[in-house]
Length: 298
Image (cartoon, rainbow, N blue to C red):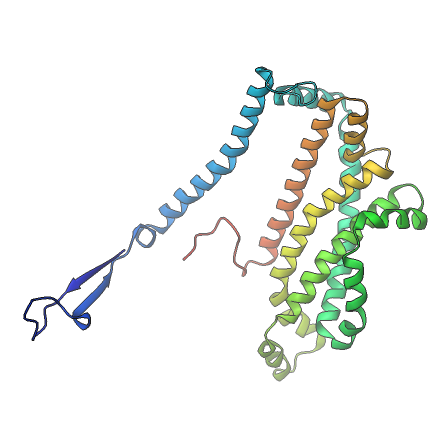
């Protein structure tokens, strides 16, 4: 909040102040006077909107199904989907598919994250390694990952291998790119300071490269978490006999649209939870980094 005070100076016959005689005074606003209260009110508004918008869409969907505005045989009402999902969960029919998808995502995500981080760190630190490998990896990056599924089927045969390899390949590129870019973006002064103090390679990694690059790396890892769920669902629709992707595709083929939407909802919940878990891990591992939410801005 600002206000302008005028001080008439000498030589102003009409009494109007000159620009040099204007005194700009800034008074603190509510955000400065009561930062915690302002932050709580903003967070309450954000959470309310985040809950209200999906809830409103679900209510409109339910109303459209009840009023026969849409064909509930093709688009079952949310209440029908919820009841069917609850019944399948109680009967134990849903959990094997959820667990199969979760196992594949976690295994592929772990492999892709570790390999992508190590190679990104190496390529970001050594120019010759980057010059040798970057063109090849750039060419492989633009290949749709589902196009690699036949290759992985030939390599690993039927079973869990192709599914895990596909998720690992997808996650690898996201983590590799974010890691290499983060290492290259580290100011040279940070490296120079470590060399001046005689830091060993491990100390340079532990105290310079890791803290400076980890926030950006975790952003890439969080994006990869959501993409990993998308890829495994698409893969399970093509080359799997269980999992949420197989459940969705098989239900659609049998015209069990309520079961199909149960699988879609489970995929959405799994993706959100997995992405949020990576975000929370990032906040724990990088307490010095700015938070994307839940923190008052100064």
